[in-house]
Image (cartoon, rainbow over all chains, first blue to last red; front, side, top):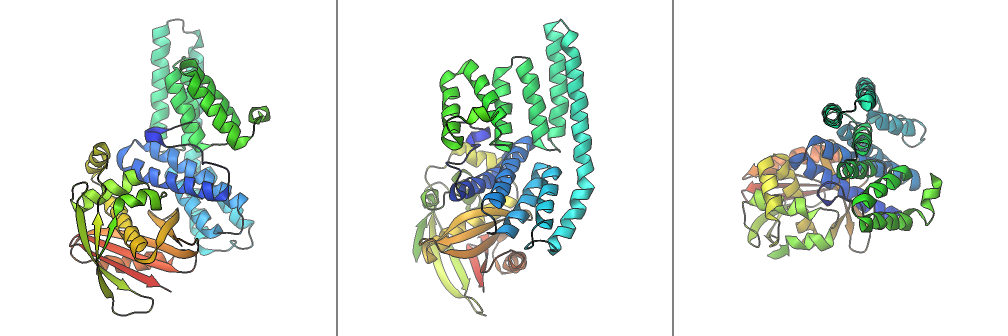
Length: 237
Length: 173
């Protein structure tokens, strides 16, 4: 299985509404625990995961608790620092005859409009940081290259204190993988899977890194993914 | 007087994460693992002006991880009181009315706890705040205000005054 910080799981027991509800509820509680005791990135990652499942429930179990799920999703988007997701939730409401025109939408539209640019700016900063790392390919001194990688990762982690955990963890994972820091890479891919639990390339990359240190754990990830997504899930990539 | 073992939350309410709720209850009650805390509950039925007064004893879990307690103690966050209050009120409602938490959602900075009877019937949304002091009534007024904004039908407000050993529940129709 995949465990993130303090044993938080990326996946529910099954892709059924009751199991997903339970899992989402657990992630919300874990995010609260993380708020008290962990670095901000952990809170943001767990909140992003809970948000993913709120949106999954809106799509797979439509017409039930829609307002509750949207409100919860918007709060989780705020906690995750993922205003693009909040914008998608607002778009869902605009397209829903049950939710369009609800008073909370106007207030949230203003908040999202005000914060979205900040997320775009942060992602640009991340891209610039990553380009800086790519530029180190020509550096032959291993130590110097490792120092540059650490510097770029530190900048990304700073953005992770305020921004969406998806691009931050993605950049950290790519750098750690490029440096063959497998344990760290595994941690960042596990975080990415909490954020986007059904994104198959993350599952494959995580299990590849697990296989480098612990084949049994890699098999366990693949087997769990098969039970959740089907025997040939990786063909979808 | 009814007694409820908070460790049962682990089995009865798996969506209330014990590593958070149980140590938060211990810290808020200033109690040791395995000991008992007593609460006087003021229960306001729908439309009632005056509450019925009931007494509850809650037995704290014996096997709470020391590292969890220390991590939360170091956090020293006021919101911990809300988490502990959620543990206390949901335990009382489990013992009193066979209600348990079916799912959790976020609204504002707090959590909405969606309750369900053991037969699977939904029974509304619960919002709970906790405070230090002797009287939960003032806090309950704030909770009522907040829970009114929750989507859905039946709404329940709860408050716990830690230190005073008093709890209050108001069921809104």
